[in-house]
Amino acid sequence: MSARVLIVEDESMVAMMVEDYLVDAGYEVVALAGTLEDALSAVERCSFDVALLDVNLAGTPSYPVAEVLESRGIPYMFLSGYGRDTLPERLQRRYGLQKPFRMPELRREIERVRNLSS
Image 1: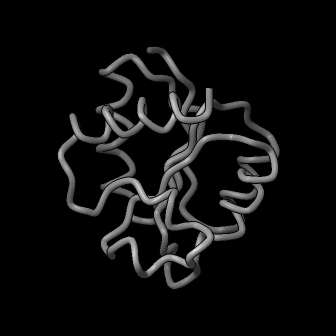
Image 2: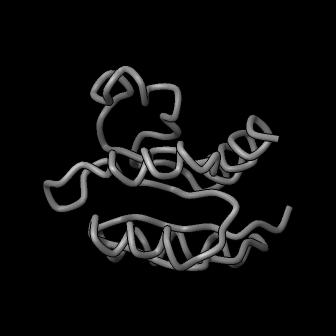
Image 3: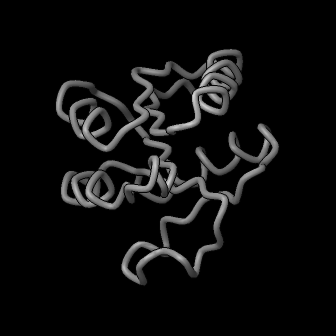
């Protein structure tokens, strides 16, 4: 189950809670990114198996990160306070969980997304 995870989340407390849970569950968090610029940089410099993307990064959509991940075939999912229908149609299949979510749900969704791409 061990996987390397990129967390893209602008709320630092949420990012730290998700990171703590994932590390305790046996995942390796390779980077935390809170802005679009930081997320795109992390995608370029880090090696990871799956990415968790907050849809809204301080008012800026994370869609450019999703586009890069799509082009590279890297599994990812959106974590959002908004519903699936707020995403552009082409990205709705990548909707993962609506915030707030329970950590065991996150673990199940990460594994579901990873298995879809294998």
